[in-house]
Amino acid sequence: MLLSLHLQDFVIVDRAEIDFGPGFTALTGETGAGKSILLDALGLVLGARGDASVVREGRPRADLTASFASPSGLDEWLQARDLAGDPGTVLLRRVIESDGRSRALINGQPAPIALLREVGAMLVDVHGQHAAQSLTQSQAQRQLLDAFAGLEAELGGLATAHARWQGLQRALDQALAGERESRLECERLLWQLNELEALQMSAGSWDELNGEQRRLAHAATLAEGAQGAAEALADGEDTLADRLRALLSRLKPLAQIDPRLTEPVELLDSAAIQIDEAAAALGQYANRIEIDPQRLAAIERRVGAIFSASRKFRLSPESIPEEVLSLRERLSVLERSQDLDSLGREAAEARVAFEQLAATVSERRRASAARLAEGVSATLGELGMSGARLEVRVDPAPASASGVDTIDFRIAQHGSSQARPIARVASGGELSRIGLAISVLAAQANPVPTLIFDEADAGVGGAVAEVIGALMRRLGGDRQVLCVTHLPQVAACAHQQLKVSRETQDAGIVSRVTRLERTARIEEIARMLGGIEITATTRKHAREMLAQSA
Image 1 (cartoon, rainbow, N blue to C red):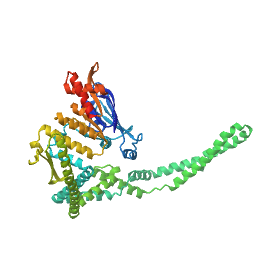
Image 2: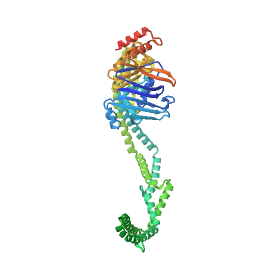
Image 3: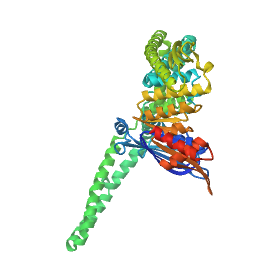
Image 4: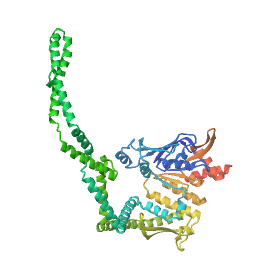
């Protein structure tokens, strides 16, 4: 359930803190006051696309935060993604900068927008004001039926299976059409791979090869330098070690006289030991170093071959091992694509897998179509279309990512008439009522705790409006329902009412949201009934409507 919505510098809202309660909440106000702005803000918090146009003019950013009571399982879902907050609540935040950049946070932790949408889908179900107009489009009809049938997971798997089948089929078609070109490309890659593999390069081998070349090229200089240093330290005449030992023989007696000389003597004693060790290590290095002209020549030939291949294939020597791996992978893909029998089997298996999933989806659609048609037909009777009957046809269609069906909503305006496509026979008001009936049934099938209707009652009035209000109140019995409405009959049925109004200030036009208590609510419903001038009669009517709905 939505607990609160905080807005700062969003469109014409400078700052707003709105608390929501359970049951049915009506959002009312004059046209242009900003009722839909609240739903737009909530949509952004739930992961809708946003840009710099939503930032209040002259401000650096828009900051939107919504607090929800967590439905069952959401806390564990968030915990598994290191996004857990206070138990039983979830905090969603969206910050949009004036340069268009956007940040999303879940319980104070940065999160991708896609994850925000995923959480939002578990919390809120929105039925927009243009749903009725989209009823005439086949794709929208399919989406409504699929939502009612709860096919979201199956449709994801179906789209994946279709993409795999089509990808393999394209690869097979290309392999059949370009078999000769593929063979030539395989030969070119194989020639290039053989030349580079002959160099026997591995990660880090280029640096090792250069190091060995330098050592062999300067072997004599290295041996001579090491041997000379060893002799100067300890192996020759008048060495540094001899002079240091003579110095120590003079200082040690003095240290016995003055203990303050003990530390320098110990340091010199340690230095004498280290000089002996360094001289021994240098001597061993000079004895081990190898002057090998043949090995040097072989190394230089190999370095030359590597440079030659690098120029030929426009590579750096260091990147040759990585290029070898890439060539092997590309060659493997091409050789696999040339295996037409294997590729054909894979494409056929992928098609069978898609068709099996599509058959399951079709079966679910047909079963749900009957339930949806029956439920909508019954609701249409309540909405003033007595005798009207909805038919939902599921007919075969060419395979696509959405399956192998085409969905057709048809309406019969009375019991004996033939059902015809909605676009041909339904008026605007009838479309609104059909759309509302479908939205109500879809909402009942959706387990999310908060339902939002954005002017779903457009195009109707009178007794039908009272029925719509009763439907919303009934939905609010076990769900939180928010509805933007211009109809007093609908607003009067709400458990609570929020009024959105505009004010002119020095900084410009701002939008305000106020929770209405009974007296203010009577005034607002009277305004909705009577227009600019509110009379005692309209107030009386408003009180009667509130009393009747309660």
